[in-house]
Length: 111
Length: 115
Image (cartoon, rainbow over all chains, first blue to last red; front, top):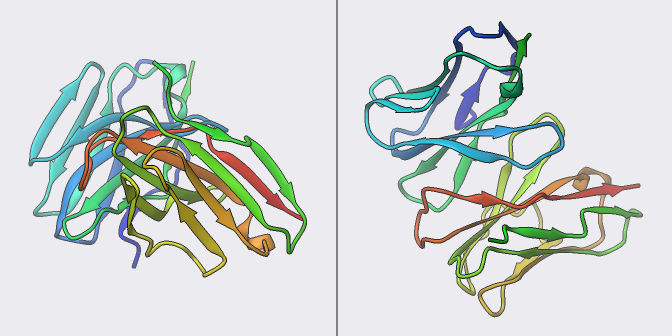
């Protein structure tokens, strides 16, 4: 079983809509959760981190964490064509130094 | 300031050749990670350094893979006797903190193609 699961998509939303990206993880020892954005042919860049249950907002981005359900999500409000990219969910496990990445969800924002 | 840099950006190797991939982390960053990213997949952890100490190498896929960071700054990932399945983008990331760092800054990657 993969540590981190994401729907690979593609997910398409119209410009201005809310994009919702979801991620589940298998290890209850996971302690830190991250969302990275990766444009085609580029390296991942960190857009959000979240460590405790609840919501965390940063501009148009909101990360939501539910440790009981082992679920983390990313909402992108007022989606823009420049948000079109692959979004990677990553978690760190309590016992190690490793980051586990999901396979990523491809998002396309249609003008 | 300067970010993480990697060289070469592209490498084509014939099967059986040895390759060396270089990573220059952000100055002063304690932690350094190597990842392998196959096409259409997320990055897969290879190894982790805290300063010059390699604390975790559990992700290295075989004994053909070797990494070092002798002075706690620049790191080299070496792959011996390359195989076609080694073709991937190799990403290096650094973080200012030790232990389990919350944030990693990625380099542009080295795209390795084994023919």
